Image (cartoon, rainbow, N blue to C red):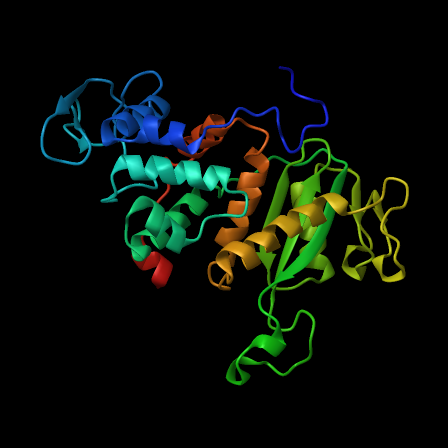
Length: 313
């Protein structure tokens, strides 16, 4: 039966059900084979010297250990990746990749701890390491683009009196996040900023759009002076003026805030940047099939580390 043209969501994508994911990654051997095939599609190579003269060592380790005959290094598929030194079995890593790829509003560490049968501490560390894999630069956007800023954090009136800044309302006590979205590719880049002045916002826009690319914003004065720029005046209820609007980037903010309020309930200022990376990375991978989204994560795991002591420092 053909899929209707007006089917909801990204109906053209091929998904993976939870039952299928458990069958595919249900034991460590299957997960090991999946990770190996994606890390070394042309055969296992030594991460130290890139030799393909590899033998497999048998033992009681959670994952098979490989030995390089040239440089004598011993390694596993986790070596020199975001999974480096992790004691979690590979099937739980694979299922965590699946959960984070398919839950648009994120997965809390408490739910991850229950679903994967691991401690909340391990789940929290695992979640941040997955976010770190989305820490990749997108190419410069050819445009047309939309740029906007938002504020993340709790309301001053809801804070304990000892934590209130008592410096007004609105964005007081919140962290500013600026973002840009390419209308043609639908890709997003967002980051936490300390200020929303002209050098900061215009510098961000010009860094992530191609030279001369069209940019649409609201009437924020910090965007004044950008070349090839049009704006709409939200203060007078002007939200669309011909092609000028910021509806696309505001849709991304809406998803980010649904995750904030509905899933995480709180994103600390210290770790907010990594959470923003999570939502922008997952947004950019949304057109892909589920297994392709997981493949994209595995391709970005090599060469990255995030130790627990660095998170809590």
